[in-house]
Image (tube, rainbow, N blue to C red; front, side):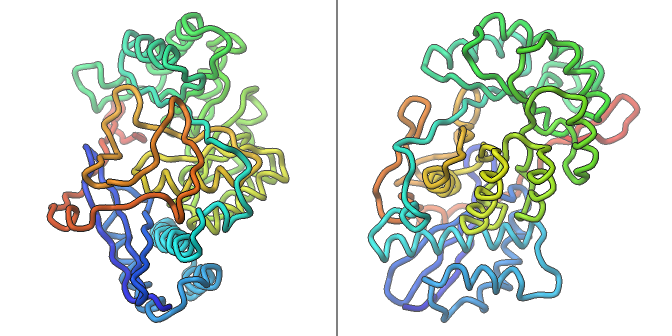
Length: 385
């Protein structure tokens, strides 16, 4: 059996963009993968055009060897664009191999260690009322972990204005009220989406009583481990870090120095299932739990379910199709996909990933690149969205 084609498809699903990749073989068996570098699909397609000639004609069962060739086979190794492309190929090869062997992908990873994968509910909000109403509704539906995505700036006249000090004063009060409403048994985390400085993060946490939040996710940018290390000494709740990391080497200082308590690994960016399992093992050795990043479509969700099923140190999987989020899993695109049962995904025995894409449907659709919004402070300077 040989690889005959690598077909990338950038697509618009809901209000966002995704990139799915099909790998075909001369036996007729195919696999689907996906890139997690949303907003830069054309760049990843360009990388895939470089990689396709390197793997066409090769045995798709040799996943590890192909990964090494793609990663190390150029002078300039790594980087988010290249590893996003490698991720898509690697995931597709796992899907393909599982189908050939007639087993789910987790069997290729040592077998499943759990019967279902717990998820957290994503709560995006711009007002206190939305925050409380969505959270109460989700808790009533059985969700016991809420990950908050604040967008309080969208409630003002100029939705592109963001002042950190205004934000932390407002959100600290809202977090206190949320804890009072949902009680002590619900896990609450907040993703500040790298909008703060270290000093602002410390100020934010000091405005809330102990026990208000159970973790904070990426309050500052992650390029500098030393900056996070200094913040770790000032903040006494867990950090969730890593959704932008594109290799085990980027995770290494955060794991070895115990800076992160939750590894926000993105299977579709970090280098696919092959690299994700290595990061999971590194994290396990340091008693760090996995909390995978999963904001895109069903191919990424399915791949992450298999990694979670095979990893002992798994906590929660991100689920964005909750609350007011626009659907990323439209069945017109994905006629076969994982299905939530309450707040969890069952671990099924379907061969491969357990997901399929309607290729003819996506071929007919125009792709329009999607840019994230831009936020600016009062003085006009750009800050992170």
